[in-house]
Length: 103
Length: 417
Image (cartoon, rainbow over all chains, first blue to last red):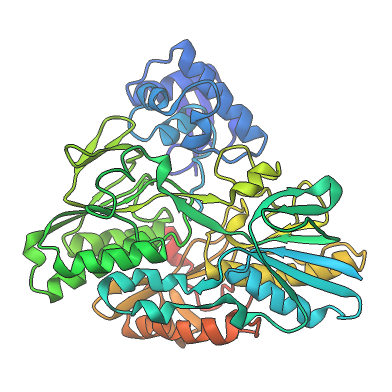
């Protein structure tokens, strides 16, 4: 774990760059992390990010299937908004922990 | 007489039937178990049948052989639980009332979730070894298959026995090598996860092994459908992997009756919402859940059901006595991972601790090597079949501690990974 400067704010991140304290997050931080993976955040992105933060705060486990049923995006859209490993990148941008894969 | 009702007589249900009958007074508690399939399958055997390592007859016995005396068995299908009425509705029999209910209905693969999976190519070029019938059919296919692109794909998580798809991959690689046709087979392991295994230390070891055996690996691949005409699997973000023979691990779902009863998370996977430490239903205090049927963030595996069972038995007895539930399940899971050529690895972990190297079950001595690959580990896995039929199912105590032990584990490995 280390302290880094993101969008001018000092935040704690883990070795993979995920915020260790979701409350340190703000929109500028989200934009910077998104820019690092070549994503420009549109209103639809923000809807998804807010949904993820809400669920994480409520202690709910997140997975792609659930997000696809959220009513905000379906799975294809989720992949379009956050290419590659969408749950991993969306979580990082949303300032929440990387979703635990419980084998 | 008070009534304890168990739904499902698989691994967990049968174990709990034995344990609870043993501990509950026969004059006070009537125990009934409901099950619709008379056959008990040793599911770890499904991995070995396709390669002729086990014969299909070795892995099936009548469920009733493992039931204790002084219980009622109802052979029927559960339609729905009515928790407000403390009763369960059955397909062909009158409703069953209960004072305490234990849900042990497990999970099964549902190929229908993925378009194109169970179409024209099903059991011609697309197989699953996650069912008895599937693994038998695959045995016949592999006997005569002449080679091509072999693709093993996990559709979604969670699945029961998470290492099994990888084990199948390693066993297949060894099978074709031993047959002298390895050069005719191109093997690719395709997973929606970000690695062959998601826990760092184990993943490093397993990725290395895949590469060594010249097995390709595709990660973050979330399959949307099978393109049957062109024999490809296609992901939601339009990546494609062509195949000649597809081994699928379809979406695993809990029993439909769990959702019909309103006890699930509402995500269509039908797993019952359960307290991860006490194994009590989060919605109704006189309902408990064990094994693959739960929504616990733990593996779905026989070993987990066993460790859960030790905790749950005590909690159910405390509940019945009107006491607080004091026993806590720590997520302990213990798995063999076949790596081919008569060898296997073993992993031991829980909610907090990822699989780490070390010796198991006796620290420093073993004889099993955690995360190491050895013949002894492989023999351990094969020997387990005897222990399963003769000890585990009957609720006979096992010499492995219920809670995961850190003794004998190398913690530094975690920081290096």
